Image 1 (cartoon, rainbow, N blue to C red):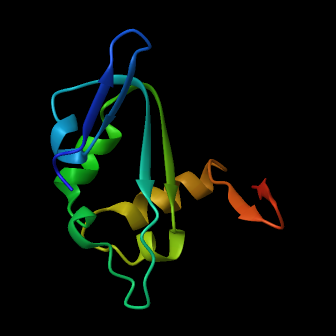
Image 2: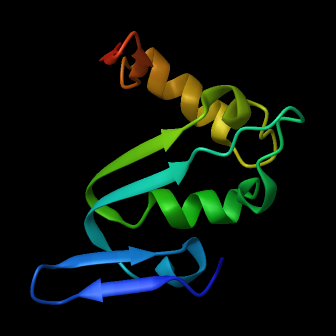
Length: 102
């Protein structure tokens, strides 16, 4: 899905794909990596260049929403290392029993 792009100037919201985000910045970037499957494949997001584009677009903060087991299996992208670092810094939350837990 490379054609998705929404921008609302009056309310300063932008919804974009990785491909469209290159060269743009935002105060906060929310990244959706919720793909989960039995083969643990993340598809085209298993690319370090795409990871670089997504996590470097934010001026103030990045929120990653994803399926951690599948992201850890994405060995080429660098997501396993990113998740390890975030976990060590207590920056990860898990949805358990109806609420987020650290």
